[in-house]
Length: 140
Image 1 (cartoon, helix red, strand yellow):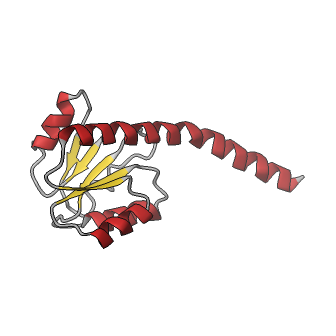
Image 2: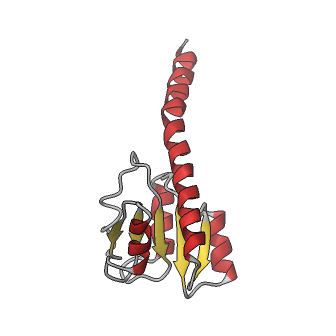
């Protein structure tokens, strides 16, 4: 699980999730901090703040869309509004949560995001094989 915020890594969010036995990696908001370390072969999810210093959460979502990333994303913010929430959801975010949030609801959401990531990860080899077979059929 990855968390990207403007605050130092040792946050209550990190403590909450590590207390539930999730492995948490935090990144600051520098433009390439997360993008350069993101591995699409890893089953994970991303919790991201809308407002960050170097790159906004919305910009990060756009970068991941450009890369065709299957990474489930949830936005957490104290500065959101309905149009912003709708926009992120239309672009594939799993949820948009206002601060303060209910801890149990976030933990439940993280489990749903990881389940989606596992399903996406398990489908990927089958999709690659189907594309390969379709390409071979086109050559015949």
